[in-house]
Image (cartoon, rainbow, N blue to C red; front, side):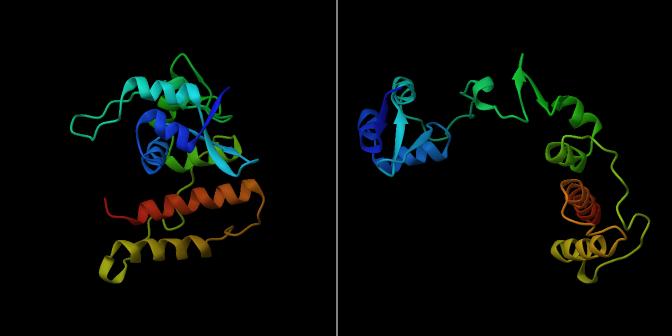
Length: 176
């Protein structure tokens, strides 16, 4: 694989180095670290593809997804195949329809899909003075912290369970 320096890649694209890094931040190019020179380098083939496509335009029209989805979504937790995205072996569409957000977060963290318990204050009639959103979140977090079982250690399972409970509690504290 031939690599280009930032200056070479910017020259090939006909842009400033600053613009090149804007392309990186938008996901149009991938920068790689050259540890020997402590600098960023770019895959020549990727730069050429972008050069052939032309300079990205401002969003004056409806944005389109101009990427190879199978290449863009790759990780050990989210394999792709046949355009079906799966999280830890579970189809994403099925999770979206049947699982709570905090259940999916815990699935990604621990690899196990668990039942989602009721928030610690379920059925409570606690109100927050002024009822500002931030006040509601603070009270919800405080209530979650004093719930029996809160802070049962730093094992992955305990932290995931606490995260799930905290997310559910905070979301349930907000007005519908």
